Length: 305
Image 1 (cartoon, rainbow, N blue to C red):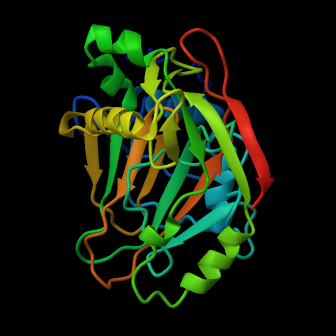
Image 2 (spheres, rainbow, N blue to C red):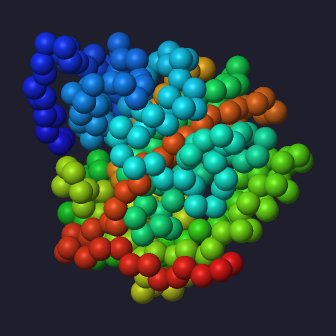
């Protein structure tokens, strides 16, 4: 576990320690008694960041006061906002991605935007419209996934690199008969093809933990044929998303989830039929991944589609 740092406070600043309720042994915690917003004092922001490093994904209930402006203002306290490179932000916002179940359903395991060389460090997701049943999100801790690999296998995967690409079959995520599918495809068609090689095992820039960098943007393991690459990826993904690494969140309106994108995979469960589900995400820019031998991510392609 990374160390949780105590932060000095003055008489007019955030004083109380965070009220943290862990959800599982390995992953996830609810933080009680905090009202999120851009005006939070720096010690509160620092404590939230430290909780995030420890638990990988943290949740805040009852943040119904947040709108797009205050959501972005809070997220900007955590780092530089990163608009989605292929999809337009919600109208009137700088970097808010509107995730509407009528457009797309992210029901496969992924780490966000790993086709970018400097892929996101974290995201802040807010529940806006929640179906009466279903629509949970799962997160998997890829640090504990790596930690629990057999020693000999660790030595092997420490050396592997994978090609990540934004050339992904998004049609698999678009609901049948979606009225907005054409507009969604038009946005994606404007994107450039971006491909980056990342180490399969990345050293976390803040905690020093080793994490598995996987997900649906991975095209192949570098140096292996397609069949062997697929087998290796299946082994690693199955291990990373084993039940013991996972926390499952049942959304209610106004919930906020923040996850460390450098140490997790996540998946929205598509089990709510034709009900409407809207969540909104603001993402913070990150840095290239670093391998166990100190090499950093390499952009292999950035060309017009």
